[in-house]
Image (cartoon, rainbow, N blue to C red; front, side, top):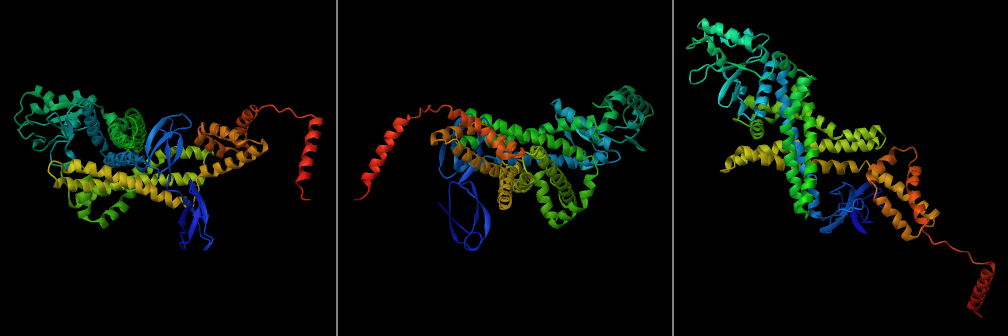
Length: 557
């Protein structure tokens, strides 16, 4: 038995310690609550991912899965870290998606296709392993938009080639120059390139580019972009093939980061728990692929949302929140999360407000992606509405906690890293983000779980109670021996129990569903019984007489 305190009057109560959770009612004050046994943990098999329950207070355990017979060493005091890799990986993906959302908002502007062209050409150059950077965020007058292999580029995507060229001139002549006095390259749509060349040649002939007199130099100044004008316009639009393709490719790096963080943490935890190297690596890769896949899908949906008007509807709320935080704290967060030169004042506040809007949208979308399986099971009747609500709420808490933890941890890590020689703000920010994501996601999920457990009992526990009741009735009807009952239970353990319980929940008659599953197993065991030959009437009469004689002799005189 285990002794616990009443949550209301602190009365000492005795309860069975082998229960995973139990509805408790205090006999003194009548308080009711759902007690959860913290000394029992739920884990998944390293091979088949069957759900198992193990004690957490026994130190190192040798675990054997009843379904696939896989065996491994498990250190229970470290088992609590099992899901932390996914918390950090999901948080990293959410932060990346939030930044993508914030960056894509500008694509919804009147000249959004120009920014789309800049981003798409940059991504294309990165994929070709060129040293490419976007440098136009500083809004420097007549500055470059991009830097590729040391070459500064100004991107102009207009309806005609001549319009692309004219946009690069003002009353004083060509506007874009390198620091060495040479003209900066002008990037134009691939389908407008030849027209742009002709227009630039005419400008050179008219002496409108200082120091350039040879019209053939136009081909050195005008750079052929990797995308057409219409492709750039479609990349800036919501729901087009081009924009979805761009977001899918752009999300690969983000999902790779999430997958790498999740896999690394999962692998380390499993090695610490005593798993063999190959087993730990296999499980870590599975965890990483799952987290990376969620991050990738979420990034595509979030980036698409950035092209809609949803950002404007959230602006007032996030601006107010950032105003309450203040410029100093905003700068601390902004410079910890972003890369590049530090920003302060209004610039930092605007950045954090924009990032916060992205986090709100990303958090909702990531929760929906992770919870899609729960919604499908709800629609199919395999889980209840209460269970779906509980699962989705815990997921949302984990995503929000992990994302908030990453931001706070990244800011703190960047500040600490800047003060330590050899570390720097970039490394400090990443390490701080990982640690913050770990703590924030795990803490939020556990706190939400404890709160919801007080009000909502898991469907699995309800279904298992029905299983126990039905099996007890069948065992009585078939007069099962203890050995026969244990063999039937072993068969039950070898099936996919979570799937069975979901199918059971969806059935019209759960008791009948359970009986139909167990009856063939029971009958199989019953058939193995030794056939009993009934005694003859003569033998019955003889032994009945002997019994009567024994009873008579046993009576006191």
